[in-house]
Image 1 (tube, rainbow, N blue to C red):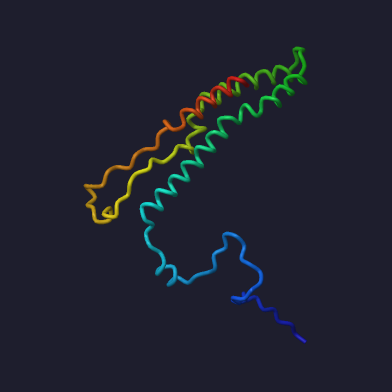
Image 2 (tube, rainbow, N blue to C red; image 1 turned 180 degrees about the vertical axis):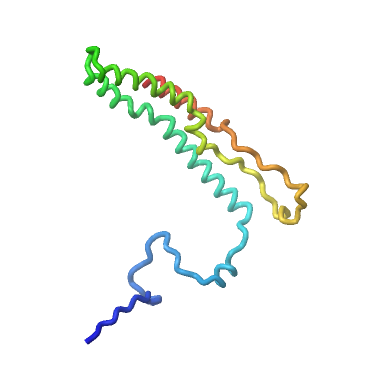
Length: 158
């Protein structure tokens, strides 16, 4: 008696098991083309604002992370001893050069966290000629000034 497995997904609307969060049911290409429209300016502005807030939160986490490793480094320095040995010299060298190289590479550390500038988008942007379109602003480090100063200060603590 041969057994046959059915691998098709039932499309039962009265299913008692809810879909997991973030699950989107499969859609055909026709449905996608009918429902896909260009997002409006308010939606783009809100998405850009959320992304900027998230980047600022991550920048503060990055700025304060060296201070969080301070107790572990103090314990490591204590256990390395006070004698002149290769291990204790290596620990001291690491503890002195790590913050210096981190301060010199501060722009590389914060590169991915630069907030994108929020520019107003008008509905007539599609009808503009290419000569009328303004250039896109380059993201700057100005909003990251305080997290960068905190990063340098926490590196100074280490």
